[in-house]
Length: 130
Image (cartoon, rainbow, N blue to C red):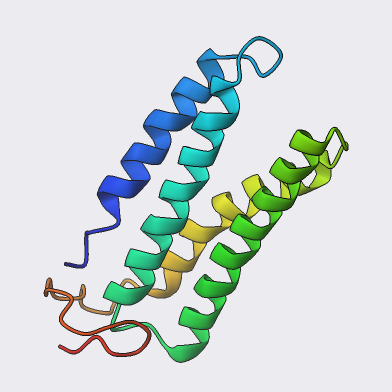
């Protein structure tokens, strides 16, 4: 349903905490948890985009753009790390875009009714029906 994104986002936070427990210079687990963190963030974003039938096309495109930017920046940074190339700017871009995604939830105004809970019944994009 509309809250399907909660579990992947919670799993990403769990992976983020574990990523912090393993310094990158001591263990490769840091990078494995980083992959899981951004993977769950991407999954949660995709589920959110598909389930929010009240969002305008422009808002959906913005959300897709943020998720694609986040995953692309993370992929470029990760490739650079594995290749021994310093591309830390892409790491910061991935993190900033992940932090920007929840800002798209502010499109509901106080005077608007809350969206109704409903199951996701059609394929994304734009196929969700009330």
